[in-house]
Length: 315
Image (cartoon, rainbow, N blue to C red; front, side, top):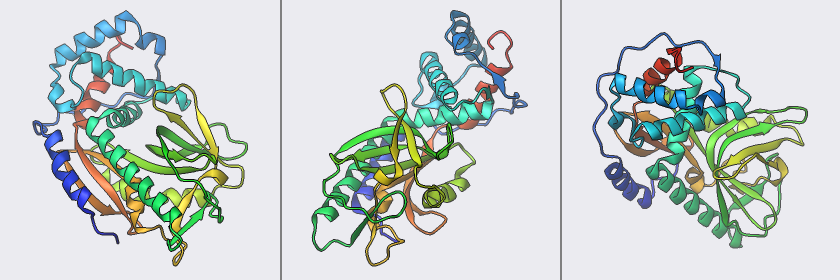
């Protein structure tokens, strides 16, 4: 297993310093989670909902220090709106509090300045190391496509896009299945793509991260020829897609089923928790990934969302 490199060690101190804030306080009593329901985007954008949301949050005396980096009602509303938009894009019609919370936390993580810095650093580090391998005649790098077939990679990767809602769509499917929550995608001028992935979990669901990090190759192995990876790009409308034959996986020539040691730069797992922690952790197969615990009270956010969904004046 790869040892933690010095930049990660330095990054822990920086991350902890940036994430410093008040610790989480007593978790409020949970409401009975409302059943899934149709929520109109028109309704969410109405003056009545915005005004009502402000009133509900004021009445609940919401402490935004528990929802950092969300600072006020306006920013909380923006998170709800973006999460709802993403759920609709997934064709989820009957929205539950759990679904709204989960997608909302992914949005929070996507926009969190510290996570954005970490993603930028780790993806740049990964692309740099992979380009060095591709340029070296003595490299142990073996390049495969998304079907685990050998492929030539002659051009360096350079352009890196921030992506989310990444899915695998097999021939005949409309929306496919979830691949990973978010991440980055590097490309070269030969239209080959190098994915780096991030999985996001709310508080209490951290035990699922090791398995999710390990199932990446398992999902690819089950994907037939013609399967597409579809995704959204931050700041751009619509959906994008690549064929798995244009995806690039970099493995060890001596052990073709094993990634190179630097592979952990391409895998980040984020969970909500009490204290900020950044460390290298093993996935279900024993391979390392970057695991981040982000101080964010998802239990409290669930409580707020359940109040909103239970208020007939709002929805």
